[in-house]
Image 1 (cartoon, one colour):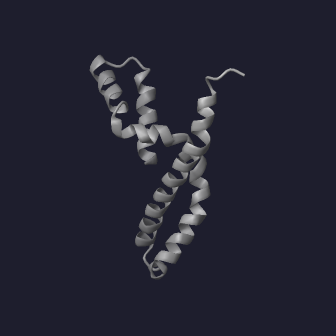
Image 2 (cartoon, helix red, strand yellow):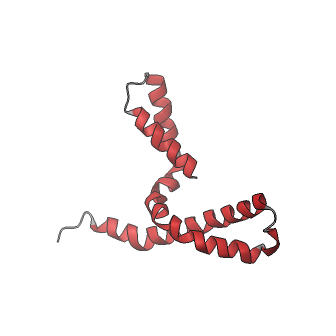
Image 3 (cartoon, one colour):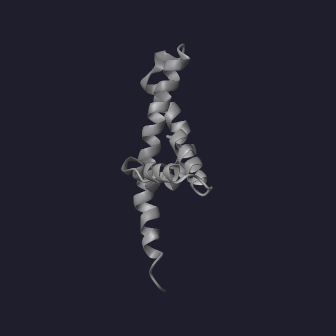
Length: 110
């Protein structure tokens, strides 16, 4: 997911350069893809949540798969899957309970 995010940032930066029209249109179409919308919506919450999830994902991976410590690839795959799931869950919770209500306050006048 991070690689896709970095790729989107790189493509967005390239869009500002003097690119041929076909390349610019293709890049715009790619970055406007509906499948990237959830990533864009949760990106800031994912940024805030990802470091807090690492210890929990490690503990969950060790608890769910205690005999996999000898196989580093399998251990990393298990950890990675749990890490991604927990990161997206926590990011969703942060987005809907903190970020979205405060974004709603942006347009109100006090």
